[in-house]
Every structure is written in structure tokens, then in C-alpha cells.
Image 1: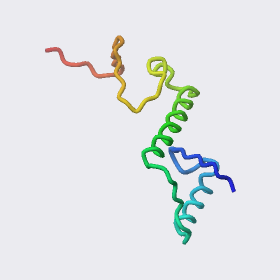
Image 2: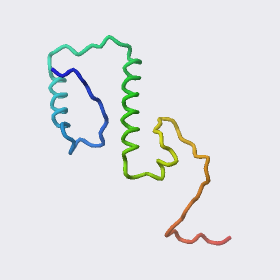
Image 3: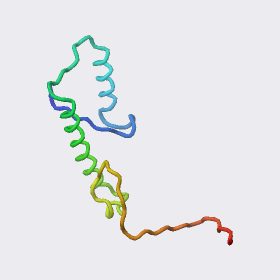
Length: 102
């Protein structure tokens, strides 16, 4: 039995290898009469482990992505905190109706 567990978020349930199998196993476990798995660790510890892994995966995906490179150049590190931009700000309005003169 494989004791390694990988938890990750995916955008949709269709088209990902193993997702349907994981759904089936989850439903089977939920319907099972077996005792639930108990882990002798504080919830805060488990949450910190999951968050660390999630942030590592997110950062790796962000670095390997082909799109959003101009944003990546400004914000190369992912974060759950609000980002502030202190650089030069530009606003481009294209194909917008002209504003009336006052």
C-alpha cells in the first residue's frame, strides 16, 4: 500500500489523469464502514504542512507558466497577501467611446 499522499487543487474535474479514480476512491471511502484515519498531530501543524506544499506547487507553476510574464516580472513570488505596486502606473484605453468635453 502506498502511504504517500499528494493533495492539490485543480480547476475542473474533467480531463485530469487519475481524477475520476480519485473521485471513485473518495466515494468508496465515504460509504465505507471503516474507521476514519486519525492523525496524531495538531490541526495547525497539518494546515501549515498543506499550505507550505500548496505555495511551493503554486510558485513552481507560476515560474513555469508561459502566460502572464509581464506580471511575473513585477511579482515573481506568489503570495496569499495583497500585493501593492509602487512602480510607474500607466492606463491604456483602447476602442473606448470618447468622453464628452466639459
